Length: 379
Ligand SMILES: *Cc1c(COP(=O)(O)O)cnc(C)c1O
Image (cartoon, rainbow, N blue to C red; front, side, top):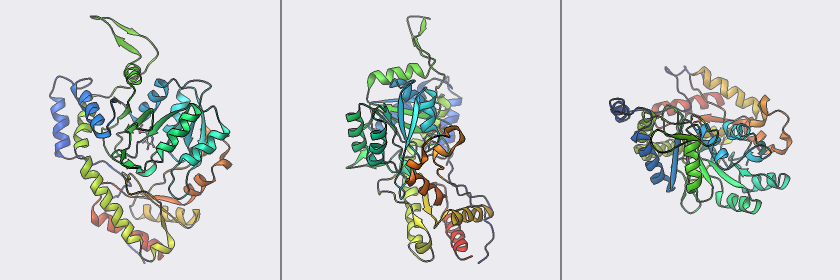
């Protein structure tokens, strides 16, 4: 069956800025503060309320949040961290920035999530690992309480990479990024994530000493003293968020419940459509749990060849599907890692494809995505 390309491009993810968001930023533009002012502090308070965490430190990106979390916890040269093979490169890069080594752990080949089983396996081979970085791939939080138990036994820290899972819950209702089972959690406010700040991120923690150190580290390692005096006590970075970004993120945060509801509805529509033929015998929907924040909607094809053909077919029809992710150890920078240890990750990567999923996606656009997939399978 031949179909025409969609008249406009349908991305896999994008932001949704409305008039209330624009008004919030304009108000900040007219105010006395555009860089470090009351909006950053207000965003931090709102993030604490949302997650139930005691401290939030807003920074310039999710990557900066990861880097500062490592530094703040004292991760440094000769240390080792364990990172799921299926994630965005930043989860591993933050260890390298800190001078530490990276060990990749495998993931479940049906969900893409590294669970306590995978961390345990990697810990057995690297018992001196100092930090575990579970990633809430696609929006589902891993079994953090078990991962936290493992870390406690091994004397390691846990940093939850919650870039995909703001608003998700896990277990018996724990909130993602609540730090109930981690030393720190990070969020990203990149436009494809749930909340857009242009760029931005945050570290959450219940540890007052860590929070204070993160605030120093995000501003060059400088601490204020009396009057005009200040003192640089260690080497920090310029990782601050501006009030412009914070006012946008704060306005977006008010809309998070609606965003999540829409994401959930779109996921149900995909799921219902894919229960029927020809979908049900040709593709498999990646497993997620009911408590997911649904950042990505991932399907699997029969094999790598069919996935490649589907990718090309969608793009030819203006549907910008994407692949999340190539295992990080396959990047040339990470060459040399023993990838035979990550068979689940390789299997996941070979056949996965992320279909468009974002609150602004219209029913008719989603219908086209489904029709396009049907046309591909019937071709
Ligand atoms: C987006 C993302 C990051 C990095 O966030 P930025 O704000 O883009 O720096 C880290 N980890 C994961 C899993 C992500 O998806």
